[in-house]
Length: 106
Image: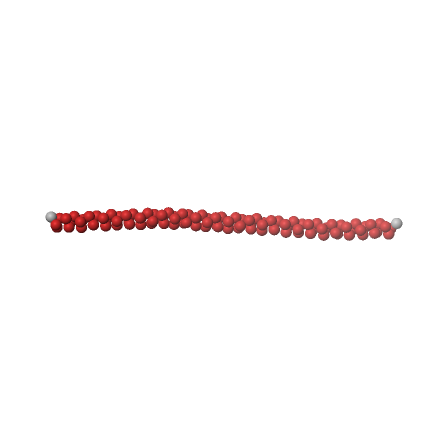
């Protein structure tokens, strides 16, 4: 009877320790799950930020190309205006010369 009582106490102690171990393991599993969720959330944020940076880089690249095209267009327009100005200067000089000759003939 004494051995049975002693065995019963040892079994109760073992069951109590097993239950305590299960509680500790359960808490640890919950903590690991929370950390996994936090890591996954941060991972998604990082992926989103990386995609945003790529998008911004592509937008800037496209904007740079548009600006380069605009610069080329403005340079061509400037060249046309320069040629037109030179032509108008020649016409003005010719007309002034004609006027001067006409005045001197009178």
